[in-house]
Image (cartoon, rainbow, N blue to C red; front, side, top):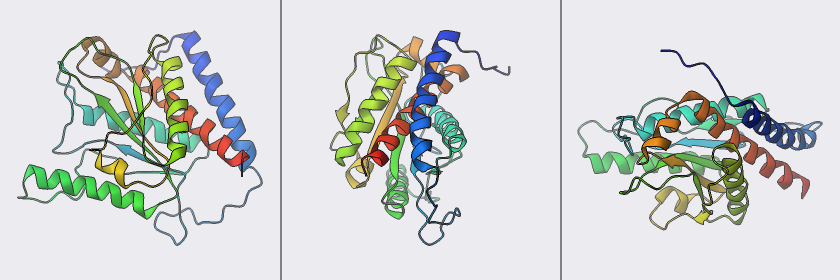
Length: 245
């Protein structure tokens, strides 16, 4: 069955207001600026504004909801929606993957080896564009089903903490006003965050181990709200960053 976009009018108004406010500040700064690089991926000097990283993919499904829906599917859907919104706002972005694949997959290699290949390939994308902000999209999971709520983690670049806070605030406004989760530094074991030098965040959009939240995450309107939160927070961050230059 095809799902049509249906958002609560009040929630939609708030989200669009956030997006419009953030976009207006960002666009005002960009108007009149000359684009110094060619808009072709791989060209000399090419540097996208954002790298969208849809976590997992291919052989690595990530977390799995009771319904059977996998994290890799949801990560990609939200990343694709975020890309569409970013491009609509004039923000240049690339994705580490835009289909259900494991990066640098090697036929016949062990699962562990292919997971390592995938992570290294994502790092290579970040290293190729060292000035680009990285937003890695994931879903959370825990052994107890009661836990819920989006949460944002930030990498080692100091500016990532600011982006994480803006994104956490936007998630709270867009998805769950009662979500009292706080931003945190990315755990030491997260390989991608250890390697990225630009502002970087992991957006854990909710818990697939919580049946109610997992059901929402599987719905197109909820994914759209999550994407709006991601994009509006980036626009706010980028706009303020340009103003301080």
